[in-house]
Length: 111
Image (cartoon, rainbow, N blue to C red; front, side):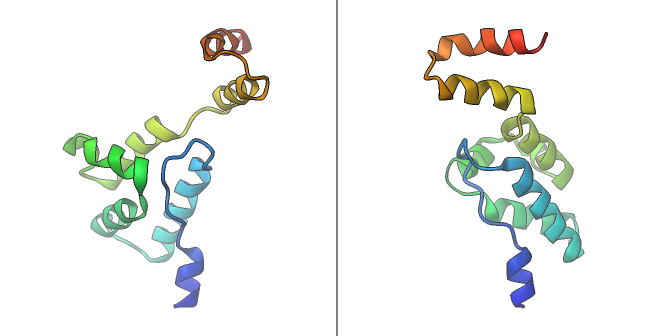
C-alpha cells in the first residue's frame, strides 16, 4: 500500500509554475502500474485535478472528457506548452517586460 501512495501523482491545480508534463507522465505511470481501465483512468484523472484545473475540467465539453484519450488531448492543449513558449514567457517575467511584448518575443524566437 505504501508503494501505491509513493507512485500516486500529487494533485494538479493548474498553477503556472507547476510542471504539467511531469504531472501527466507520473499520472500515466501510476495508471499503467495499477493496470487501470478507461473508467478508472478517467476517475483518477478527475480526482487529482483541483482548484483552477478542476474548474477547467468542469467547463470542458462532455465530448472532450468522455474518454481518457480525449481528456489527455484536452489537458495537453490547455496546460502543456511547447518549451520555446515557456522560455519566452520566463524571459518576459525575468526582465519585468510589459506583457504586450510577449507576442513579439515569441515571434522573434521562432525565426
